[in-house]
Structure formats: structure tokens, C-alpha cells
Image (cartoon, rainbow, N blue to C red; front, side):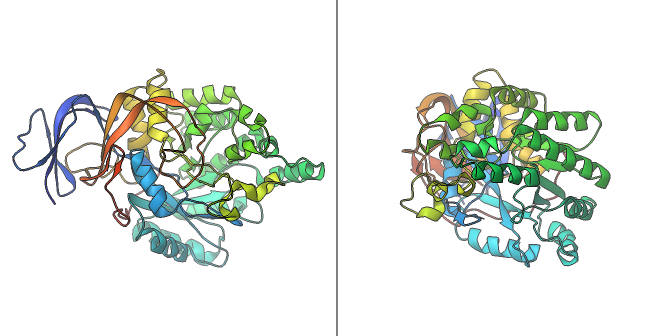
Amino acid sequence: MEDVLIKGGRIVTAVDDYVADVLIKNGQIEAIARHIPAESAIVHNAAGLLIIPGGVDVHTHMEFPLGDAVTCDTFETGTRSAAFGGTTTIIDFALQQRGESPKQALDRRMAVAEPKACVDYSFHIILTDITPDALAELPDLIDRDGISSFKMFMAYPGVLMVDDAGIFKAMRKVGTQGGMINIHAENGSVIQVLIEEALAQGNTSPKFHALTRPRIMEAEASHRAIRLAELAEVPVYLVHLSAKEALEEVVEARDRGISAFAETCPHYLFLGIEEYDRPDFEPAKFVMTPPLRDHDCQEALWRGLKFDDLQIVSTDHCPFCFNENPYGIYQSKQLGHDNFERIPNGAPGVEFRLPLMFDGGVGMGRISLNRFVQLTATAPAKMFGLFPRKGTIAVGSDADLVLFDPLKVHTLSASTHHSNADYTLYEGRKVTGKVEKVFLRGNLVVDGDTWLGHPGNGAFQKRSASGRV
């Protein structure tokens, strides 16, 4: 592998901001200095550009089954899309089916991802069948397989939901081993009553997805998850937090010294509940769980990001096409055309996280440039046991680097993104700040609009303890 020298860029990490050269050898950062002689290295001029760590997105769903549906991005197309957006590591999900062991779920997903992934990857295991045998496997998954985070659902009764006893058992089992439980926090039982009432009254349109998942039910479940973790004396991580009231539960817990962490997503920061007032079936594009919220929630989330009540911005990239073609109805929102409950929950987003957060966060003065890097790379790497290999620019770290133009204006559109999804939540939105080049372990995989990577280039990442920031 040839040496690579990136010259004269403005290096920005979670704590640093300076101009220097970066020398890459054998996929890792060999040296950082004010001036490094080129010698025989391949040289990339970064003058006028930011050099930032490759993004770490800890919440994606590539070719992932959800009920009758399956997401439309494969590990190849989804991770290629991630790379064009400056994300060089993802953590996806291995879903334990009923009667299956957690280890079997991991092996099955590894076999799917390994030949296809274009960026580095790991998995959270979704636990659905909390048997003594399943619980007994968890310490080895942490210690030997490098899987230190496990997701559990308080929503979707009869499908994914686990009762409080099961959640508590899993928390106690993994907590002493350096593991952490990620929680989808909504009161699934009450929400199911609201869904059934809406359908019985003939309310089948997409906006009722939002109306049957009220903010208070996210807050109630968040409170319950935090209290269970407090009793189990383990860290807990709330995924895709959307509601102001749920954030208040996190703030209160952290004020008491509880290790309660949470992420939010760009769609909750930039889009509001008015999207469900679009005509015809258009609101189905915005059917994700939790749903979009009122604008007072947006302001609360931005404040949470600024003051570290929220630690991470992930995407929950869970893409389905809006139209049935070309992938068929089971990868399409049209599956729920006559019944909002059947609309596949999720939306694309992995490619636009960095430009959105730079434009709407840094550009609007809501967060600093260092905080931007912290939220999109460093904190995710630390939270889930990838740091300092990932998430920073330091000697010895993997050379996952993004050359980012802070002044370039471009328009977000499904016509130019690299996901299989036939729409984007941000169609026509102009943003300032664009990914120009992306290096994965020193290999140039994105050069402007040119793809230089290939399937199978991504490597599985064993992780150390999660939740030990």
C-alpha cells in the first residue's frame, strides 16, 4: 500500500483546530506536522478544506427485515451512500428471531455484510427472545466477538417488544461485562390501543401514524428505561430521541449522576409535524418511529446537543422507496396505502448527516465546529468502543479521513444521492458544506462525484466496552 500525504488542510477534531499535513502509512496515521516532505507519497492538496475524522453512524438498517417489509438499501448500496456522505463506519443491527440465539443472529448478518460492505461496520444485536440460554451467550459476545451493545424494544407488541422483566435481566447480564442496552423507548401497549381505535374509526391515512404515537408515551418509556438501568446499575442509551418530554427525563437522570445517554437524528432537528399535512399519500415519506414532532421539540433537541444532554447524532437510516417500482411493494411505502399501520417505518438519511449538521448546526451558530465533529464521529466512537481507532485524527488511528469544503453550496436531492431510495426527506434543500474526498484506512474511496471503493472493502470492527464515556 502506497503512502499518502494530505497537505495543508485545516485539521478539526473534537478538541483541535489547526493547519497541518497528515502522512498515512499502511492504513493508519503515521505523522502529523506543519510540513512533511512528499518523497514518494501520493499527495492530496487540502488547502482551503477541512480535514475531519470519518463519520461514525451508530444507527443504520441495511437490507433489514421489518415485518413484511425489507429496507431497499443493500449493504453495498447503503454503505456506498454512507461513504459519499463522509461516513466511514456504521453500526447496523442483527435481529434475533424467536427461537434463535443471539450468536446465530450475529453470524447470519455477518455473512450478509462481509462480501458487500464498502465501509467499516459492526453490529448491535436486537434481543427479542430473552431465554436463559440467550442471556448466557451475552458475555461471550462482548468478550470474544466484540459486540458490546444490545438493542431492545419497548414498542411493537407481539413483534419486537420485550417486557420490563426481560429488559432488566438483559441489563444486569451485560452491565458487568462492559455491555450496554440500547432502548427504543415508546409505550408500545398504549400506542397499540390508540392505533386500533384510529383504525376502527376509519382513520387510515399516514398522519395518524404520528397522532397515535404521542410525545408523552415516548417520555413515559424513557423514564421507565432509565429507572430500570438505575436499578441494574448499568448505562442505558436511548435511540432516536425525538420528544422534548423524553429529553427532560434524560436531563433529570444525568443531573442525578445516572449514566443515561441518548441520540437524536437529523430529521427531528430539521423537519416538523407539518410534513404530515402534505396532500394525498405524500406524508408516508415521513412515517418513521418515533414520528416527527412539534417545533418546540426541535429547539429542545438543539439545546440538548449544545449542552451534552444528547451525545450523538445518528441517522436511523431505514430506507424504503415511496413508489413500488423498481424493488416491489415489500420495499415500498405503498404497502400501507390503505392502512397507516402497515406503512414501513423508516426513511433514508445516511448520506446527508454531515452536510445537514454542518449547514444547520455550525452554519447557523447552534453548535461549534469541534462539537460538530464530536457529535458525528468522536462521541459515537467513544460510546460504542471504537475510539481511538475511529473518531479522531491522531497518530496510530485508522486513516479514516474526510476532506470537507466548508464553503461549497449544493442541493440535496434523490436524483444525486447514492441510496436505492427513490426520495429524500430533504429534496431541494440547499446546504453549505460538501464532502469532497473520503479515505477509508488510507484508501481514497470517494473523489468528488467518483466512486473508487468496492464491495467487501469494509472490515468488521470488534469493539470494546460500550457506554463507558
